[in-house]
Image (cartoon, rainbow over all chains, first blue to last red; front, top):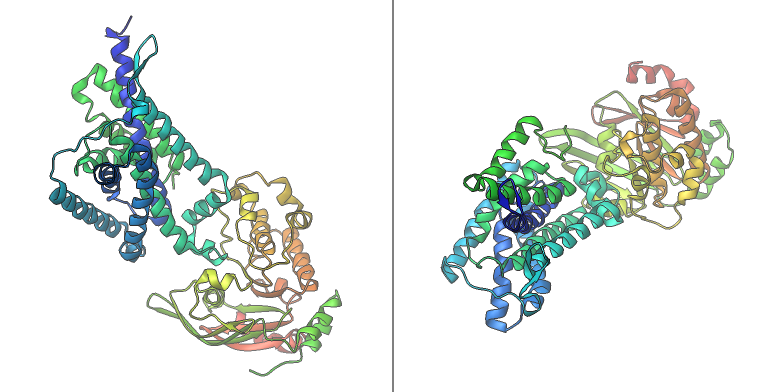
Length: 294
Length: 261
């Protein structure tokens, strides 16, 4: 069977690949959106946090013999705690300044972190195996579905849904939403906003670490894996609308699919299509697809 | 600052009569709010230049003055929402001039900002439930909905889709839930239809009988004067005058000068 001259098998394969990439975009841009919403910080070190998440998984395997599932539980905690330390030591000093300072600070931080990892581990990638339970593939009849990739999509949808649910439907989330709008007033009501900000940053980078662990068996664990993906993720955030939770999730998934489709029909443009979409969205709807026009 | 006979002020205030009784009981207690030599800055601008004022437990006090006299800044300074402040602010005898806003709120202070501060990303009910409980004894959601039936009807609406009057009610109602006993209300009657202003008037009287301590910043003298036990007049970041409600009539001319009305 063919669609527009493309074999269905190839089309579905690329769509799945797009969906997997989209899952990473969604998880990473979600963390950026949560952080930007409350902290007003454009967290350029997000890619480095993602990379470190993958490295925690790799190091746990290499040095401690602890496998994938342990990493999935522990890496977000380790990176979240690291994020909290960074927030307390560095980032909190730039809240009152222009966005540019936060961007420069986190960008510099990303360069330092990447430099340290390159120095320690070299620029080439480290292999990380697919966990036993998720090896192999399932034949769906119309396509062969690699189990691990299916897991990545399911796991990231679950993480995104839970995050959305907590923010949009719970009391803790209402503090976060209100704090995003007017942190001083929320603090004047008796909420410890500085602590909430600190934990939010920790949570946002923990999401990046989850993405990093999920990515480890798919791509090689390398110090550059963060900077390779982060530029696309920032484009996703701009397209979805800065700070929009649902927007970042849906846009992340959709742009993964758009990339996948482009790879089928016009592979030369697959690396740039996201930026073309970004330019179009900025022209037509500068606040992003899901952003509030001010 | 000279102590004034508040009971005299109370007797001139319209009913309910329970109000004066509440004062007598509370007179001997620590003041609910006591401010001395308060200076406050926003960045480089020095806004308050040594504010002194004292509010007894269960008292309703109004801060009058022209725009820019420093009334809103006084309320914000009490909560630590200004850039920098020096002097003394005691809430129920506890010094808070160096405390963080969330600690100050936890002492039982409820704040209704001039811009109302209704959150667009929260529904009416989420707005109402947002401020955490700071003391036992706050009103229940049912009490609040009984007092403001409009809010019950609009509970699922987005906060900022409520009418101006409903948003004002919401902004006040949400601090009644928290158990705060010292309410700082900034221009709650501003820009509202007379029928809403009357509803707010009834609400303040009700809160007075319940023994709440209230500091109201008001431009609307006609709204504030009948409610307040005492009135402070501010000018250029200082308190320049204070009257008990009973002394109001004899001071009307000077007050008009201060307020420029």
